Amino acid sequence: MTTMTKTLSASRARFFPALFAAMIGVAVISLTGHVQAAALHDAAHDVRHATGFPCH
Image (cartoon, rainbow, N blue to C red; front, top):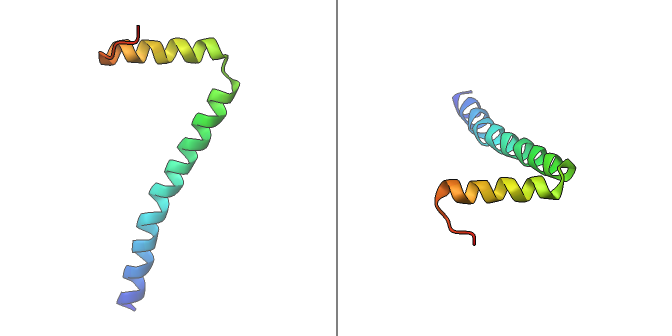
């Protein structure tokens, strides 16, 4: 009984982070698919400047 419980909780411990990552990925892809290209470019440009990377 103890072995079965440990195995079940170990598989759940791997499943939920993977499910969460998949949900975040689908959300990012869905949102970027509906945003205008200029808005994505401006956001990426601002992030590059904020993190200190030169972009031009």
